[in-house]
Length: 342
Image (tube, rainbow, N blue to C red; front, side, top):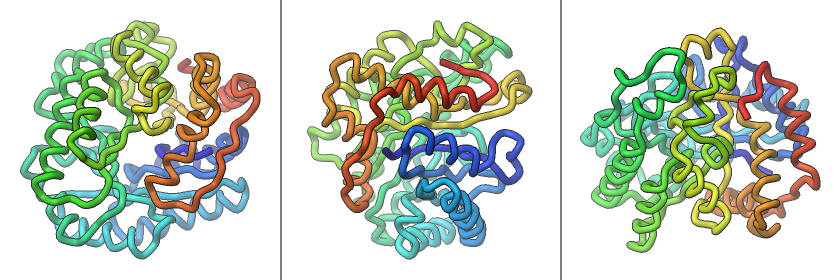
């Protein structure tokens, strides 16, 4: 199995988690590969930091048997963008793809506004980049941070509405077409029916675009976030039951390409202060259990938990091995974190 979207912390965030701990928990369930995101502290947006991060991941890989891969982070600096594209070409599959934040999230790496985003796509197109560009798609101009009430995590969905996600994807698709982008545009952690419907339309028009979905967006709603003890605040936020069902059904019918945890642990102190992100590795097993019980075929489950990722990223094909009792593994993995958001 592959989890293509994790935030393993460490370095200046080692109080939240270390790379070794996250990969150890992943190994419990039989994950073979993890794709780490670049909004680390310090961020993975230059060559030396990326090499240092890969070295740390390699050490944990030797101890856990889980393969470590890293997204190179994009900024709005043209030379840095070209350097990141070059590193992908040089170090693939260690550098597995590029990551852009189209809205601010943990780490403040947002590239805000269509003009700045267009410049990124144009540079990548001119550089001949044909890999995966994974995007955190939320349009900053449509967010309402004043609507978030501290301590009431359910209000986070009002501050970052579904419209912000959908319109960001619309912008990105338009820019990709305008600039002749030749890679795969991947929409991370899709959370709303409107976005899923839009991506369906874009595919019908011939666009090369994929989607990933998290366990929390497939299983939980804004109503769950009202239980303060579960600390259910993340970007993008939980949404309505209608949106949750659209995500779950998109996985069942194959519209959504794969499951990704968006594993992003924090300390309880940071969660009380409003930090966004939850431990997601245990939830991968819970979602696998729910999908199987809902009638998802074993072939589709293997596609969702690894094989579609391998095909899209150009990794060697390998049959995904799924656990027989994922719920038991979920319980075991959840013990490794200070709270169980599910």
